Image 1: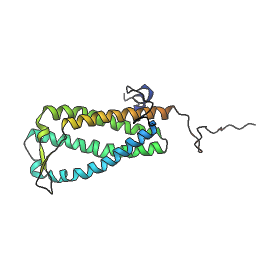
Image 2: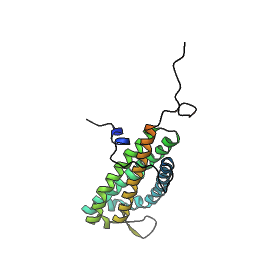
Image 3: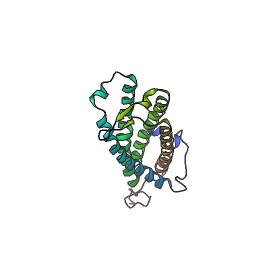
Image 4: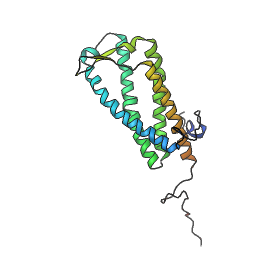
Length: 196
């Protein structure tokens, strides 16, 4: 039986509830910073991935080396989860914050937890095996670069992702516990009953 994701996030969450974010600013401001940071970094990441994609030629992809095969698989998961899904979820997060829609914030939380789990698996793989040493040639340069990030950079990204989850989850809890807003945004709902 699949549980409702709202039971994992919000006030019942295993994540600590924060009252403020980023040096004392409000949770809403912190979530907006997280959303815009994720979207902007995503654009630069995608631009940086293009030379790597071009460097993954047929000769490199049809290799018999198990390290290369695993490195390509891990890189592809990075590209799909962090490069595409997380960036789309961050754009939806921004929409959810600006339009006060908690379900949009929840979607980002789900994708961010998947990203953190992926990083939790990837860090020991890169640190303890030879896949971190696999290099690919940039298509427009005669330079070989590592296909995957250094384990220290991955650990930093993992810790930052956990912090982003804590801040976003705290804001999600705040949104869920807030009274529903009416069309004017006053926080009071319309009285639909008429006095006779």
